[in-house]
Image (cartoon, rainbow, N blue to C red; front, side):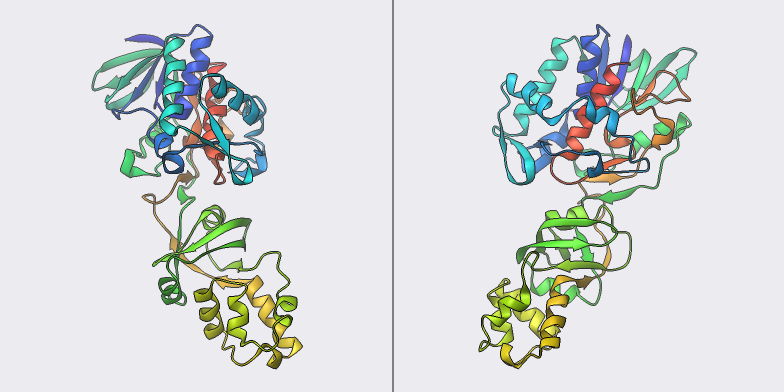
Length: 385
């Protein structure tokens, strides 16, 4: 097969790149080792696909070059994306913090993207193992189990290592290195954090307890925290995993609450019972035990009340480690953006080679940011490939 553009990976970024290329009259083939396309999209948001976020900013992304994402994001706003898919019959619902979910599930979005790609002439090779990709003169050659493909441009859209259970591999990084591109250190991202030995028993005892928190460390995160039998999870924790590498995190169990004033309203209550009016009961009792709080609130000195408020606002939690790639929603790190054009996503050292989506050293927060980066980077490359 000979085409203008060969795209390795038929996920969100690959599909959008194919649509962009096809609109320019380029012949395109998407090659994917899976029998289903866009498997991560289908799994996103528990199958509901948190497809974008109306409050996307460059600061929502972790990247070695914080300015790298600006060009692609500026050319595809969340509103433009929503107008496009709404026009194609994909209904969405806005939920907390600007998140948009697909009303009819992720499958509706995937079918729309596939239909758009086919409409502009893109072809699909699914279930095709990619054995090798190389440049032969001015042409790229992709060796697959279904036969060789020759293309003037090659797009690497193979995604990261997260979610290996649905087919994710590290092959994209392997290919990038073979083309001489540097890859930054890789880590699982947007993943639960496992408790260290000091708090393992507490987390196990509180498994199932959930509450809104704020977390501080090398960065900041806010949202729901869920205790599990192994540590902590929930949106706030997943976001915190983006910046945590080692050391303690500070968890604010009562963000926005004047703890001292709230306690003062119930001076006769036992401290543990007063806390239970502010926190989930099991957590309140556990914290009272850990902090050795006994007797009525009235028995606490002003200094002790202040110390308690400070402790609840910055409870130290030192993770043993982050959960691995099996639980991670994204991969932190990737192809070094220093060697990639932020405007076209083309590799400076290999003309005609493009890298998009999660394969790059670009990782967004939880809440539709990573899928939007996939679309934006795919369309950016589609304007040139």
